Amino acid sequence: MQVSLIATVKNEGDALRPLLDSIADQTRWPDKIVVVDGGSTDNTLGVLQEYADWLPIQIISAPGTNISEGRNIAIEAARSEIIVATDAGVVLSPVWVEELIRPIEEDGAQVVSGWFESDPYTDFEVVMGATVLPGLADVDPKTFLPSSRSIAFLKSTWSAVGGYPEWIDYCEDLLFDMALKEEAGEFAFAPYAVAYFRPRGSLRAFYKQYYLYARGDGKANLWPKRHVIRYGTYLVGLPFIGSLLWRDKRFGLLLLVLGVLGYCWRPAQRLWPMTQGWRPPSRVRAFALIPILRVVGDVAKMLGYPVGLLWRWRNGQNQDRQN
Image 1 (cartoon, rainbow, N blue to C red):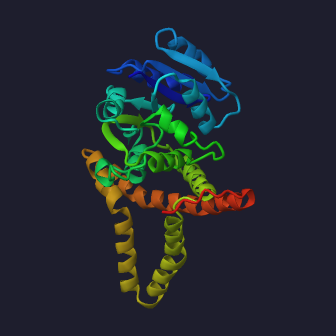
Image 2: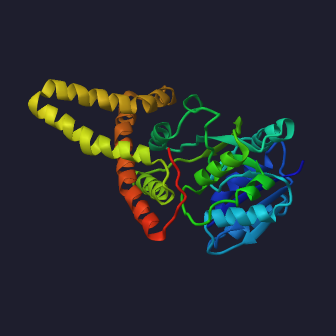
Image 3: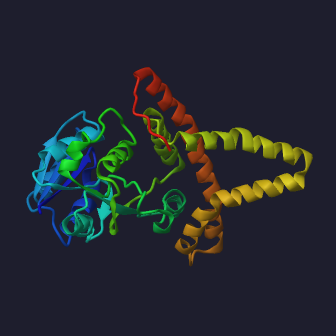
C-alpha cells in the first residue's frame, strides 16, 4: 500500500532541514510528502523547494490557515489510503515510517500511535523533558492518545470523523484522537516509531505553551476533573497545609515535604539516569528545577483554562469531553 506523509509549516526556515534529512534517511520512504505552508515570510518555501528536487514533496501554500486546516488540506491532497503525520521541528527515527505503517499493512489497524521523545540541547531542556514528558513505562498503549507529530491512520477513517477540528487552535490533535477512537476503537502502538523534538528552552516559553494548552482544554471542555483537582490542590490544599504550619510547624512541614516529593517523584526518577556523570552542583540544580517547572506549569494551566471556558461559553461550543 502507498503511504503519504503530511505536515504543516510556517516560518521554519533552515530549522526545517533536520526533519527533511530524517525523512530522506527513512528505511521506507513515503510515496508522497505533502507540506502545507501557512504563510511563511522567511526562507521556508525555498528550503522545501530545495528538498523537492530529490524528495517526493508537494508544497501547498495556504496563508492564514491554522494547523487543523493545514493538515486537512494536506490529507485531502494525498492520494494514498495510509497517512502518516508529523510536525516541523522534529527529527524522525530511521524506521519511523516503516514501524508506523506495519500494524496497518500486517494487522489491518486503522490508527497507529507513534512515540515521541525529547531531544534536549541544554541542561534546562534535559530537566524540562524529564518533568513534562512521560516515559514509555508511564503510558498504557491501549489508552494512549498520540500527538500528531507521530501518528498513522487511514484516509477513510480521517474522512469518517470529519478530519481535524478546524474550530480550535490548540489541542486539536487530542480531539482528533478521541474522534478516531470512537470510530475505529483501540489504536495499535508503535514504540519504535519515534519523533524526537526539542523541549521549550525557557520558563517563559514553557509558561506560554502550557497556558495555550490549557486554554485549548477550556475551549474543548477537555479534562475538567483534572483541572478541578488542580484548583482544589492550590486553593484548598496549600492553605490547609499553611494553617498546619502556623499551628504545628513540624507536622505541617512534614506534610509539605511529603507532598512536594510525591508531586516530583516520577519526574525525578526519569531525570536520575539522564544526569549520570553530571557534576554535583549541576545535578542538584537540575533536581531543584523540577518543582519550579511543575508550579509554573500549574499556574499557566489555572490561568489559561478559564480563558478557554469563557471563549466556549461565548461561542456556544457543544463538544463535551469528559475525563
